[in-house]
Image 1: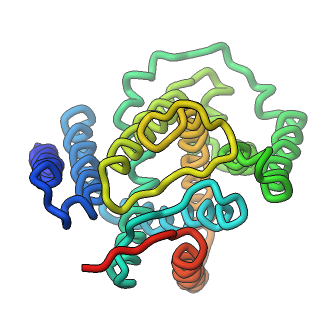
Image 2: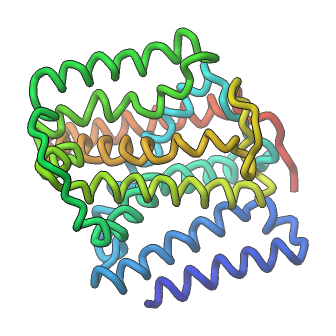
Length: 300
């Protein structure tokens, strides 16, 4: 329970400093609050499951290392879409890039570990098995839909931008279900176990709400510029935008399952090359965010 106590203390301290008017706390409130939240997730995992993701440091390190380039894929797509911008980020590049690294490295751990926490509550969800979900026709349909979801937003971003939040799992999950079904929420569903998929959907919705809550109160924040809908907002996000978080969680699980399956089949030399390539591409993406996505900086 130490992680839970530390997480709650960190989140409360960040909220207290924000309420007291600390400029530093306001600027970095999102990072402090989110770090506290992740520690709370670890504490609840320990209480519910008997162990937490902090007990698996190598797995957590791999997940964090993949998480940053995984999210940066969406940042790169956003260079074309222009769906969000960043305001009020530190003018010091090293502080700013360290913030990028931490924030983006926590995306996969937050989504996947929150899903692991709630999955026992979803274990009793057992729909009728549907083996046709794993058939050739279903895989072909997913491939076509996935390609369309990846290409159409790049060609006509103002019309098709929401499709990016489903492209990856449509492309990856059928392959994963066939090659590594133990890591596939689709394979579990087809066999009558809805728990993995439903827990991911719940996790995505919960993480999305907390991301937007903490972002709203932070000095350094993202703002949305989606072409539609422009209707009422909850924090910075239009209400309809919250529908994107659950499928994004499914994508996170598909990406992680694919990465782990591929990693197990790679030699040490290839793993080193892949890690270096991802690190280099991540730094290029950081520079791209600075150039095209960040709209304002603040100095200290």
